[in-house]
Image (cartoon, rainbow over the protein chains, first blue to last red):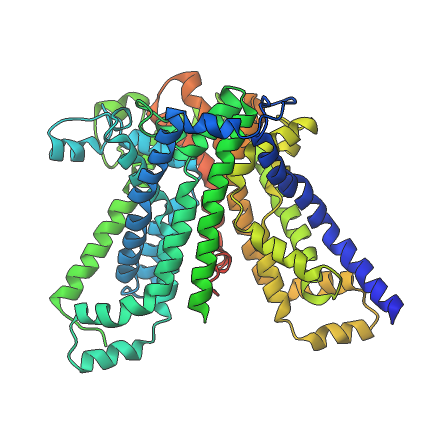
Length: 291
Length: 274
């Protein structure tokens, strides 16, 4: 019995070893190292001295840190709720379609989601180009003039948000469609027999029953959008006048551009803590829902 | 109980209109890519009158695209194979074998789900530098190998395989490795395909890490490399669009061929049973 147990433990050890070793090396150690570096004045490559909370104090006194935190928050506000509501709206429309038409429309909405971020930004830079961009006709219609949207401090962030919504909405749409399909059709039939209007059906049946999916999408979106970097870096590089500078970009700037590994790590720790907090809250929320 | 009414038809038309608008940027990119470069900026035609593939010719033969393709294919396929392999073994052990520290390990993996890998880039870069892997395939691949959700999904599936199967195989003298690769993996082939495709798409699309770890143009992946074309040759939109379309092809095709699997994998990894 003991040897059987030992044999089992040995097999288990062999099976988990590749994952666990990789995990410890490229995941767990970097988490530790991120915290450790944030308390030193290390450059990107090389040793540093222990400086306690100096990096964090520097951050609090750095204007760009507040700008980045603010802009990240602004981006989150511009994307999370709109992206969720648009996903729900589109899903309500798409589920009404039948057969091949539904599959086709679903593919059309979902396709952007699987594109690489740089492909998305290249396409939109062309669509929004000040001189020749096709979207300038629309912008001209509303504002009366052509606007170089990524060079305008007022337009830049909302446009990055718009592109992000276009890019990532397919995922939300999928989750909502799955959720809507789980609502039994008899509920609607019964309600219709009772003379309920479409709006009443939505208010009394769809909205409460889809709420768990809505909550899931909202939290997933929040976590995803806090990590914004790729799109702003590719479309605006944080400009104009830092109006689209975000937290992850500050990590990049401090660590990789200015060679302040320690300070960059401190920003990373800040972002890490925010996201872990949100994730823990999400986990609690979903667990409560599961009961 | 479909209500046939003007309202329904209007809603259908509205849906189709929105779908067309949503897809328009993609359509526009394709149309632009097959126009001659001067025509792109001189006239706005929605349906091209001639098919001109010079932009594609340029993208394929005058840029480093082929090298980026090789880098992307090698790294994303390796990431996919290794992620599936190490995760499936770990998940099998967690699901089927009683060993000390099992619950702790699973708890740690569940918790890792919450860690944003983007926050780790600085320390991962330092680590890869120590390993001498900056600007190499290995450097691109290594930090992408831990995908906790793959382990979690596999474990859930293995938990639901009837225990009798494993007992019967045991009696026939099969070891756990055999049971995993001959029985459990084939039984869950569908989910393996789904997880593999989504891992491949994510690896192909990865931007931040490959962007940080490569600094010479010939080591870049497609996703990073295509952002260099402008800098090197100035803005030429037909070229840009041709390059973008070629860059997106491998993932777009993977999605179109395996739609159901992609959907399933996304549902599973966000906690909805697909």
